[in-house]
Image 1 (cartoon, rainbow, N blue to C red):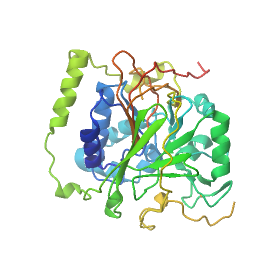
Image 2: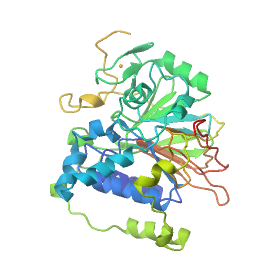
Image 3: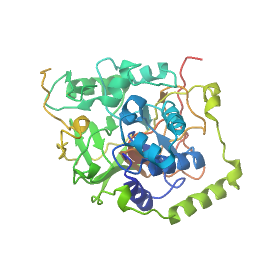
Image 4: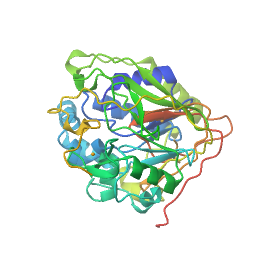
Length: 394
């Protein structure tokens, strides 16, 4: 979402609010846009009110070494003049999950992709939270920074400077070893909002339209409408909004959120408030989400195309750039997981997936237990109880 608050408001308005719709965010919810505080506040508010219906996966822009040099820090200083508040925001990022599964064996959701030292999803289960720096674990660095590249068979270095390009061969090997049909990821601007590549085994979703005011890209999400069946939904680009030109007023949406929360919990006073200091005492979980589906998705997808990006200003969002070197909306138990992989069985009848959200509508008598959220958005309706995979570490 990259701080493009009006794209998120449009997505919520069209597809419904939690708990009627579940959302999975694929990372990069902040930075680049000019409404990062509003973006993070709205998403965190939904997570607090409906912890079983909103999930977030960590992107490369949720790491302090990246955020330190971006709009988030300058925006918070301008609005609050408080560096301590910035540090507290960074701390919340360190507890975000890295990956998620949909329908257990259908889709692996992650911000960037795969890398040479990442063979099994279970490797994420061995990494405990919190994770402060992206360079602490090579697997995490690769997962949040890497990109698919159809012109290479194996791997090659990435011109982003971090991560790498991976080809169809390692992608197929990864999917086969893990029993997964496809990967859903964000991380790259795509003109049409949603594009598939590599025999439709990897789909890129990007939900921030008119990215940075430098592009005319559409906003995209993925909706899971039945078991193992998803539909891309795209929306025309909105004018790029600058804070100096925009006045914000309360929306009817927030009243609806409050009413839904009151109806679910009787009183807002019942909403849990977990202080950061107590997070480490919470039982560990994985950073991956999963759901079980059986049908095949529609294969009528467009190939990934290169977005119109100003290379000087947006060097890390080049899409399928030729490398210079040969061979580049789930649910968690309202507690914060200590491990990087959360695997949950999300059964749905109606789901939306975007670069930053997973959306599902829960069944009347069955509930979901997700573990992580991407920058893209996914939505669907659960039909079975979720399965959560916990790390062997105590």
